[in-house]
Length: 138
Figure 1 (cartoon, rainbow, N blue to C red):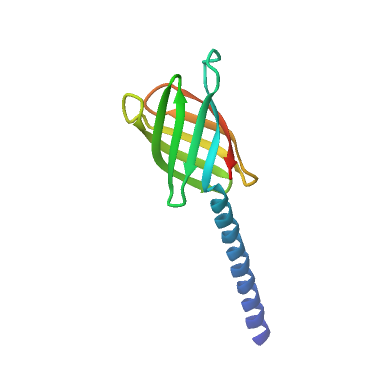
Figure 2 (spheres, rainbow, N blue to C red):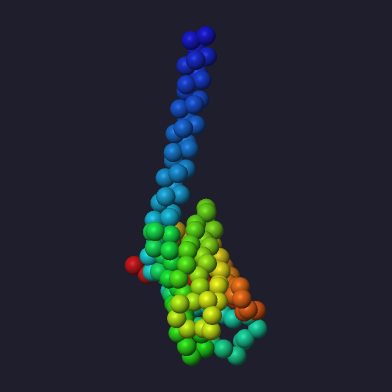
């Protein structure tokens, strides 16, 4: 009976240890995504337009600021972000530029080495969509 109890405690303590290690990895990745990102985005169906610039400021309070070029105008959007595993997602709305709140979502694969890869964005109130890639600036 004593041996079973000791074995039970050993198994439970190992599970708790593994679970705590998993949480630390997630927290570390969330810290690595905090900061200033810059890159370019492409508008689907518009090969005549050069890639437009895109900056993201990812804040630890869960908010994000998105500054981008839209043809010859500046757009600034504010919203929220989340990171689940290596899946980064943000949702923002216009505060400067544009004709309405114009909500937009973006998703990308987070590379802890300092890149957002395979990014896809979609304008939720219109038909615009496209792709983006970014690098983190230190």
